[in-house]
Image (cartoon, rainbow, N blue to C red; front, side, top):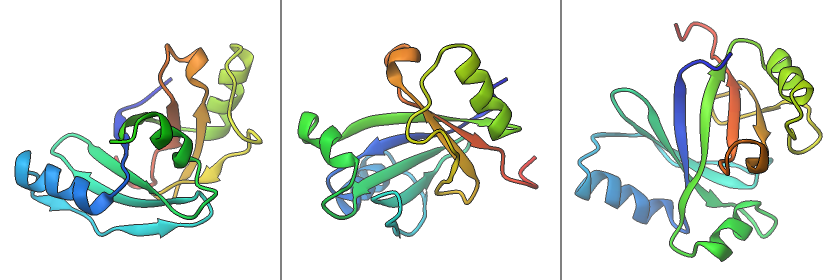
Length: 140
């Protein structure tokens, strides 16, 4: 059912500082511009790797869902992993049928890649928050 690993989400108190780490320490050479997603309560920046991406996420506004994560992990850290799926509605329904908790209303929302996404609760995913995103059209 799941397709390729699209990205690993990393929460950070400062995207600017995290970019320095990926660029200056790890040697990343392809880093996108920071952009806001107020509807999701985050700033986002993608670090492009040969086989995947790192999605840096920073709180946007006081209601950001990332604040809770950073309260427990002040330096930041791995927040989620994202896998591609062909059909987000079928994936959601499959997750529910298998007893997994789809977060929020359960209705897909548009993620940072401009495609529908859902999140599945870590308690059902071996302790890892899993994002499922519909494979971008024309990506394969």
